[in-house]
Length: 130
Image (cartoon, rainbow, N blue to C red):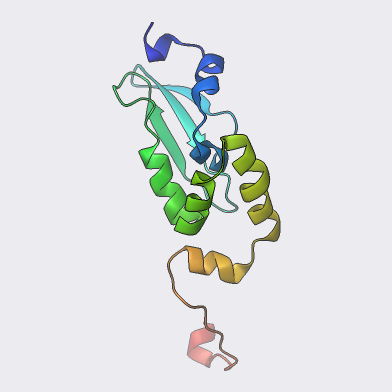
């Protein structure tokens, strides 16, 4: 039986990698140009990225694109903490849940790779306000 013929409930049992915790629990199943696709949506606030996994390829179970997105969206330290967890459920409850509840704006800017956050108390000029 090929991967694109297996029901998604059976595939979900094989999704044990911690990286799945950073995406919605159930992917959207689509058909694009006659090819079946699982589309995973990132669960970070304000992030609209959807990772597609074509089911008719030899790397249909690869999580490398998901890991790249998690590293850029959530941060490398969060990804490494997730890798130390035992499964995706633990990551979803302990790491992702706490970050979504307690995330601060300065931490989000640091995750995006912008460096140290600076503040300015100087009033904008007329041309800057337009």
